[in-house]
Amino acid sequence: MGFYTDRILPHLTDKVCGVAANDALRRRACAGLHGAVVEIGFGSGTNVGFYPAAVERVSGVEPADVAWKIAAKRVARSEVPIERAGLDGQSLPFPDATFDTALSTFTLCTIPDVGAALTELRRVLKPGGTLHFVEHGLAPDASVRTWQHRLTPIQRRIAGGCHLDRDIPGRLAAAGFDTVELDRFYLPGAPKAMAALSLGVVR
Image 1 (cartoon, one colour):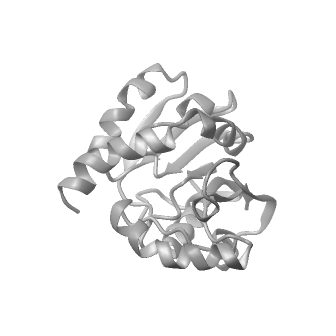
Image 2 (cartoon, helix red, strand yellow):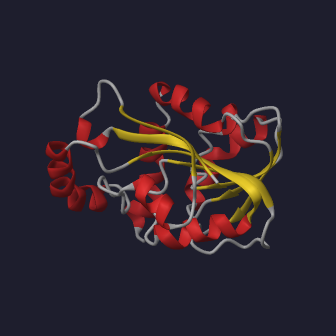
């Protein structure tokens, strides 16, 4: 952690991840959320406007104080009660089987121990509970993967530990999640190395 990571990066992430082109992705990822929701990597609250009416409350897990401050206006406008309820997705401060659904958007690329975070999400979800996600990660094409492996060391330095080449569906399966829905595609108009997306639901 440092000045850049703590003070500057949350503003950059808000601008980059909050672009209107991502709205449709967030809407799709949030579809089907209901009841009590835990959102890891809450960030600056860019998902707030997309929670369905069936969501009763959201517990946001976010380590960056600056990101939470940026989120304040979005949280204040939300019709869904939202609280900052944790700092570390790798160690969630909730009892087992607390949440009906969970949400992660552009977060699993950055968490240092993604396996621990996914194990924690399984623990705090109720039996049959679902994790909804949209993440960038390892591309399906070998030529793109080559560039992802080359660029990831640079990406990690400038983007707070973000990996371009994490196999998100593979990590979910390794953590014991079963796929309910999965769509893998490239985001149009963006460099493929940074735009290989996985969007879906697991339980």
